[in-house]
Length: 195
Image 1 (cartoon, helix red, strand yellow):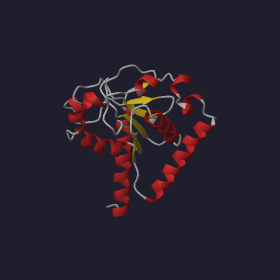
Image 2: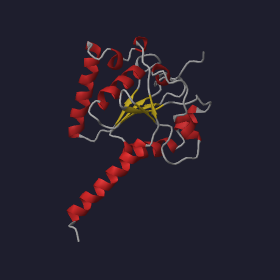
Image 3: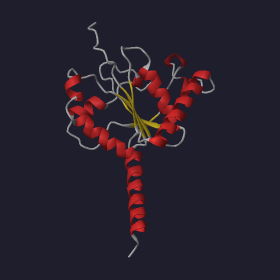
Image 4: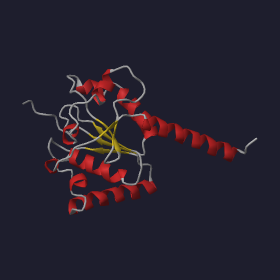
């Protein structure tokens, strides 16, 4: 009979293998990022701006040494302050270390990331929240940056109700077991004006 330490080690190895298999089953996509997107980590990796994002990644890893840190919510006060730009560049930086990084496009009212990646409209967070599936889905592996992406999906009419339904917390718990980092590009804090 194996010792308790050996049994625990075998269970951890089996759990890790199961996670790797689950994450590898998400479909892969290629992105097309242009200079106009301002995703400097992808278009100008040697620039000062890309270096600043690498520094942000180092600081987050340092914080992780003293506390549990897996989820990072990037928000702003009002729309168009750069939260999507920060989220995408940060996901690229964190994925450099071969960690499993998931970028969630959480702003379902005004999504921009799928468009900036040149992906068009894909099923995403909105469809998962409105559906009946329990397992995470609508997640895509982006080959060149090496991270996973859950787009916002088609903007629903009941965004606030979906976010408060309880399914979002279920999803986040499940995703925390699959990924080393979860970066959420969230909606702005102040209410949106009607246009």
